[in-house]
Image 1 (cartoon, rainbow, N blue to C red):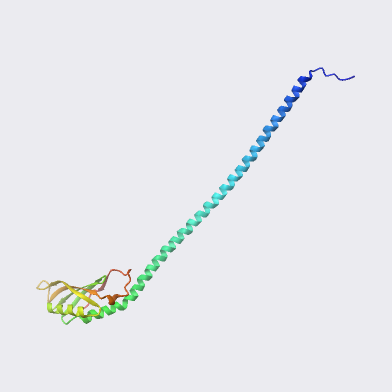
Image 2 (image 1 turned 180 degrees about the vertical axis):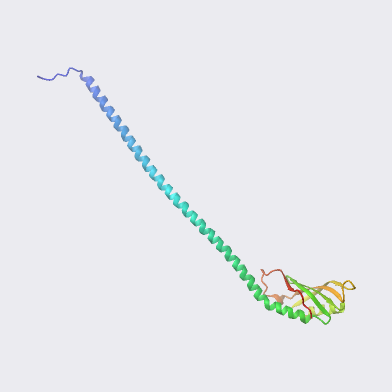
Length: 200
Protein backbone atom coordinates (compact mmCIF):
# COMPACT_ATOMS: atom_id res chain seq x y z
CA UNK A 1 0.00 0.00 0.00
CA UNK A 2 1.53 3.36 -0.94
CA UNK A 3 2.73 5.72 1.87
CA UNK A 4 0.87 8.95 2.00
CA UNK A 5 2.25 11.90 3.98
CA UNK A 6 -0.64 13.71 5.42
CA UNK A 7 1.47 16.62 6.83
CA UNK A 8 1.65 19.74 4.77
CA UNK A 9 4.79 19.72 2.61
CA UNK A 10 5.51 23.40 3.16
CA UNK A 11 5.77 22.97 6.91
CA UNK A 12 8.14 20.03 6.46
CA UNK A 13 10.34 22.12 4.13
CA UNK A 14 10.36 24.94 6.66
CA UNK A 15 11.44 22.57 9.42
CA UNK A 16 14.22 21.18 7.29
CA UNK A 17 15.52 24.62 6.35
CA UNK A 18 15.38 25.72 9.98
CA UNK A 19 17.36 22.67 10.96
CA UNK A 20 19.92 23.32 8.21
CA UNK A 21 20.19 26.97 9.25
CA UNK A 22 20.74 25.96 12.87
CA UNK A 23 23.43 23.47 11.84
CA UNK A 24 25.09 26.07 9.61
CA UNK A 25 25.01 28.67 12.40
CA UNK A 26 26.53 26.26 14.89
CA UNK A 27 29.22 25.29 12.35
CA UNK A 28 29.98 28.97 11.63
CA UNK A 29 30.26 29.75 15.33
CA UNK A 30 32.52 26.74 15.87
CA UNK A 31 34.67 27.75 12.90
CA UNK A 32 34.90 31.36 14.13
CA UNK A 33 35.84 30.13 17.61
CA UNK A 34 38.48 27.86 16.11
CA UNK A 35 39.91 30.72 14.01
CA UNK A 36 39.89 33.02 17.08
CA UNK A 37 41.62 30.35 19.16
CA UNK A 38 44.27 29.83 16.50
CA UNK A 39 44.80 33.59 16.19
CA UNK A 40 45.07 33.91 19.96
CA UNK A 41 47.58 31.07 20.14
CA UNK A 42 49.62 32.59 17.29
CA UNK A 43 49.65 36.05 18.86
CA UNK A 44 50.49 34.58 22.29
CA UNK A 45 53.34 32.62 20.74
CA UNK A 46 54.64 35.77 19.03
CA UNK A 47 54.34 37.74 22.27
CA UNK A 48 56.18 35.04 24.22
CA UNK A 49 58.88 34.94 21.57
CA UNK A 50 59.23 38.73 21.74
CA UNK A 51 59.40 38.58 25.56
CA UNK A 52 62.17 36.01 25.31
CA UNK A 53 64.04 38.24 22.87
CA UNK A 54 63.56 41.22 25.18
CA UNK A 55 64.84 39.22 28.15
CA UNK A 56 67.85 38.14 26.11
CA UNK A 57 68.51 41.74 25.09
CA UNK A 58 68.20 42.91 28.71
CA UNK A 59 70.67 40.24 29.82
CA UNK A 60 73.08 41.27 27.06
CA UNK A 61 72.69 44.94 28.01
CA UNK A 62 73.50 44.10 31.64
CA UNK A 63 76.61 42.23 30.51
CA UNK A 64 77.62 45.14 28.27
CA UNK A 65 77.11 47.60 31.16
CA UNK A 66 79.39 45.47 33.32
CA UNK A 67 81.98 45.36 30.54
CA UNK A 68 81.74 49.14 30.08
CA UNK A 69 82.23 49.67 33.83
CA UNK A 70 85.29 47.44 33.74
CA UNK A 71 86.64 49.34 30.71
CA UNK A 72 86.07 52.69 32.46
CA UNK A 73 87.80 51.38 35.60
CA UNK A 74 90.72 50.15 33.48
CA UNK A 75 90.92 53.53 31.71
CA UNK A 76 91.00 55.34 35.07
CA UNK A 77 93.67 52.95 36.34
CA UNK A 78 95.62 53.50 33.12
CA UNK A 79 95.39 57.29 33.52
CA UNK A 80 96.58 57.03 37.14
CA UNK A 81 99.50 54.84 36.11
CA UNK A 82 100.43 57.22 33.26
CA UNK A 83 100.31 60.16 35.70
CA UNK A 84 102.57 58.27 38.13
CA UNK A 85 104.97 57.38 35.34
CA UNK A 86 105.10 61.04 34.26
CA UNK A 87 105.83 62.11 37.84
CA UNK A 88 108.55 59.45 38.12
CA UNK A 89 110.06 60.52 34.77
CA UNK A 90 109.95 64.16 35.88
CA UNK A 91 111.66 63.35 39.17
CA UNK A 92 114.28 61.22 37.45
CA UNK A 93 114.99 63.90 34.86
CA UNK A 94 115.20 66.60 37.53
CA UNK A 95 117.69 64.76 39.76
CA UNK A 96 120.81 65.94 37.90
CA UNK A 97 119.43 69.47 37.83
CA UNK A 98 118.90 69.44 41.58
CA UNK A 99 122.50 68.31 42.10
CA UNK A 100 123.70 71.03 39.73
CA UNK A 101 121.55 73.58 41.56
CA UNK A 102 123.04 72.54 44.90
CA UNK A 103 126.54 72.90 43.47
CA UNK A 104 125.70 76.34 42.11
CA UNK A 105 124.20 77.46 45.43
CA UNK A 106 127.29 76.30 47.32
CA UNK A 107 129.55 77.97 44.73
CA UNK A 108 127.73 81.29 45.00
CA UNK A 109 127.89 81.49 48.81
CA UNK A 110 130.60 83.92 49.88
CA UNK A 111 132.51 83.67 53.14
CA UNK A 112 130.42 84.77 56.09
CA UNK A 113 127.03 83.83 54.59
CA UNK A 114 125.10 80.84 55.93
CA UNK A 115 121.82 79.55 54.55
CA UNK A 116 119.23 78.21 56.97
CA UNK A 117 116.68 77.16 54.35
CA UNK A 118 115.90 77.29 50.65
CA UNK A 119 112.57 76.63 49.00
CA UNK A 120 111.63 76.37 45.32
CA UNK A 121 108.23 77.47 44.03
CA UNK A 122 107.99 77.01 40.27
CA UNK A 123 111.06 78.74 38.81
CA UNK A 124 111.57 80.95 41.84
CA UNK A 125 113.81 80.04 44.78
CA UNK A 126 113.63 81.61 48.22
CA UNK A 127 116.83 81.68 50.32
CA UNK A 128 116.79 82.38 54.05
CA UNK A 129 120.06 82.78 55.88
CA UNK A 130 122.40 84.75 58.09
CA UNK A 131 125.24 86.98 56.90
CA UNK A 132 127.98 88.67 58.89
CA UNK A 133 127.15 91.94 57.14
CA UNK A 134 125.02 93.40 54.39
CA UNK A 135 128.15 93.52 52.22
CA UNK A 136 128.24 89.72 52.30
CA UNK A 137 124.62 89.65 51.14
CA UNK A 138 125.49 91.98 48.25
CA UNK A 139 128.34 89.66 47.29
CA UNK A 140 125.94 86.70 47.40
CA UNK A 141 123.55 88.56 45.07
CA UNK A 142 126.39 89.34 42.63
CA UNK A 143 127.47 85.69 42.63
CA UNK A 144 123.89 84.59 41.94
CA UNK A 145 123.60 87.00 39.02
CA UNK A 146 126.86 85.66 37.56
CA UNK A 147 126.01 81.95 38.01
CA UNK A 148 124.95 79.61 35.22
CA UNK A 149 121.83 78.36 37.00
CA UNK A 150 120.43 81.34 38.93
CA UNK A 151 119.57 84.89 37.94
CA UNK A 152 117.70 88.04 38.97
CA UNK A 153 118.49 88.10 42.71
CA UNK A 154 116.02 90.16 44.72
CA UNK A 155 116.47 91.01 48.39
CA UNK A 156 113.18 91.17 50.27
CA UNK A 157 114.00 91.23 53.97
CA UNK A 158 117.14 91.95 55.95
CA UNK A 159 117.22 92.30 59.73
CA UNK A 160 120.07 93.48 61.88
CA UNK A 161 120.31 94.10 65.58
CA UNK A 162 120.06 92.28 68.87
CA UNK A 163 116.71 90.62 68.16
CA UNK A 164 118.01 88.98 65.02
CA UNK A 165 121.03 87.48 66.80
CA UNK A 166 124.60 87.67 65.55
CA UNK A 167 124.89 88.94 61.99
CA UNK A 168 122.07 89.95 59.65
CA UNK A 169 119.17 87.69 58.81
CA UNK A 170 118.02 87.97 55.20
CA UNK A 171 115.47 86.63 52.75
CA UNK A 172 116.52 86.63 49.13
CA UNK A 173 114.74 85.46 45.97
CA UNK A 174 116.31 84.24 42.72
CA UNK A 175 115.04 82.77 39.47
CA UNK A 176 116.17 79.65 37.64
CA UNK A 177 117.66 80.44 34.27
CA UNK A 178 115.76 79.09 31.23
CA UNK A 179 118.50 76.65 30.23
CA UNK A 180 118.91 75.35 33.75
CA UNK A 181 115.47 73.72 33.88
CA UNK A 182 114.67 73.02 30.23
CA UNK A 183 113.50 69.47 30.86
CA UNK A 184 110.85 70.49 33.33
CA UNK A 185 107.44 69.04 32.40
CA UNK A 186 104.18 71.03 32.67
CA UNK A 187 102.91 68.45 35.17
CA UNK A 188 105.89 69.02 37.46
CA UNK A 189 104.82 70.14 40.94
CA UNK A 190 104.97 73.91 41.30
CA UNK A 191 106.41 73.85 44.78
CA UNK A 192 109.02 71.67 46.45
CA UNK A 193 111.50 72.02 49.25
CA UNK A 194 115.11 72.08 48.13
CA UNK A 195 116.88 72.05 51.46
CA UNK A 196 116.03 72.38 55.09
CA UNK A 197 119.51 73.12 56.35
CA UNK A 198 122.46 74.08 54.12
CA UNK A 199 125.45 76.08 55.12
CA UNK A 200 128.96 76.62 53.97
